[in-house]
Amino acid sequence: MELSRTFRIDEYRVCQQGVCNAVMAGRNVICVMPTGGGKSLTYQLPALISTGVTLVISPLLSLIADQMVSLRSINVNAVALSSETKDDESYTVMRKLEAIANGSGSSRLDDEIKLLYVTPERLVESAGFVHRLKELGKAKKLARIVIDEAHCLVSMASFRQSYPALRSLPDDFPSVPITALSATCPPETLKVLLVTFRLGKLTGGQNAKTHGTVFFSAPLYRDNLHYKIMHKEGSGDRTLSDVAAYIQEKYKGESGIIYCLSRKNAEEVAEGLKTRGIKTGVYHASYKEKEQVYTQWREGTIDVVCATNAFGMGIDKGNVRFVFHHSKSVESYYQETGRAGRDGLPSDCILWYRPQDIMRVGGLSWEEKDGTTRLLSMIDFAHNLTQCRKLQFEFYLGGQTPSNDRTKRCQSCDNCLRPPDTIVSRDVTLEAYKILNFVKEATRSSTKGDISLSKILNNVGKLSIKMSMKVCTVHFLLITTLCQKKMMHFENNF
Image 1: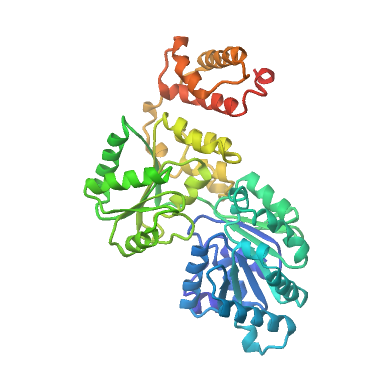
Image 2: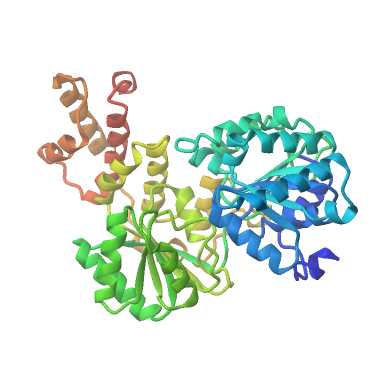
């Protein structure tokens, strides 16, 4: 059996067998499984036990490289075509694909390419490659197309035109089934996938109908990850000292990641931790020594990496004991915290936060498509003091928990462990009205018809409203949204 003989796995995880069966049956499939949940097996195993080539579209060269190393270590015939592939290697791959399509090769040759990895750019920039794939499709030798990290179709669409261009796949390969895999697939992302690839109506994987797109969604919460919001006190230097003290006390000498909002911030935090005796490196897209830092971190020469979100997909290190964050969306927060605890041991996922962060993070989010909406969800997540984090992830990210566990709390996150008598509820409707009324009047007096958020915050103290900054935050978020839209719909909605 390939599962145990090739992949050295004794049994399937949740959803894996069902997804493999649907893929083998030639169905279109969308699968949502947690980071580290074993998504790759759901197309790699079918690729080995079926005829034809499985095309895998992956967002990053580093991801492809990791898959190549992993597959070749277990003697799986996989190849990659990318900007880093040498000309002679590309030529060899193209000749093999031609031979497979024409049926002129031996069975041994046919087996030489079971998995073919490319970035979306290859499909856009190489007409010759697409032509070769079409020949495979016509010859019924293109078994399936896999969209790995399928949420990138949404998250990367604004700066990688190759992703929107994937909408041509149904026209180019009308009879080839599509498998889309992701750890995060909120409802809006799911809709984009269905429309882009013209997939049929969803049917649940447990009792799938004979037609439509088979949808699988595993529980997104991993029991060994403990989620917590830590409120920052005072200045950045004070927070840095608190972070360092936490690491030294609980995870001294252990491996961890600290995600920062900017390259400069990553460098500053790394330097601050170094001066406090923690072996730390920096990783961001323009950092010349980033690959060396990654290697040192994997080998244990350094303990902590301070990074931007460039240190994301493809990071696979089992013993990451903590992931600390500033984050702009629940989706990215969930994805990045998934780097922790892949060895199954307890690990901390901590969001360091204070309400003043909204101003800073908001400035980074407003330029992004749907950035404000995602930020609002993230701040709502941070301010939620009662709901289990597991249930919050299920709500935001569209995961599916078995019905008997759907309302069951994790009993390990900060909200589950928080004593009920420490939470106070307060109706702030009147205060919210006063703040919004101030914005309305200030906007009317503005010659441009809008008003900056900084002006609102500078003047809101004149309202004589007695409430803390924490209480105000939710209302500032609403104001932020209105300001971002330049008050276009303010009069109608007030």
